[in-house]
Length: 179
Image 1 (cartoon, rainbow, N blue to C red):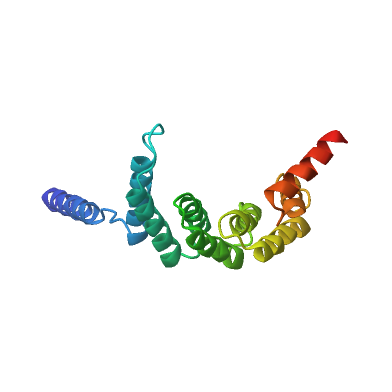
Image 2: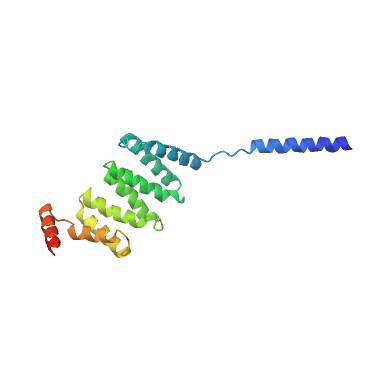
């Protein structure tokens, strides 16, 4: 009888060990992509004294967009779109930046940097795309929706100077400095 209990105990132990060995956590595709992004970010930003490699930056944007496309409900999706927009703007790809910011605007209204995304759209329209009408639209939207935001004053100033030539701007600034 004791031998039988001992044998059953060993069988149970062997079964539990086999079960544990077979239950290794395989990373999901989402976890793998997140890990790849984290590694690429570390590589891209490791040397802050050098300019960022444009090819690596473009690859980073592609990965951010892929994550946001595949995992739209994930809390990282709007953050990755925001980062993709920043890199795109800095890589002189303002239309791509606008595309990513528009996705935030349309799908992630509760995202912590949503107001900044709206401001950045106005800024890019004004300074990169030279689209004064769209810039005005987004500065006005920003001011109406976020009058107490830390960027509200900058948005008001941008609206005031929007469309002015350099000469007109200098005259206005000189006049303001005299007052």
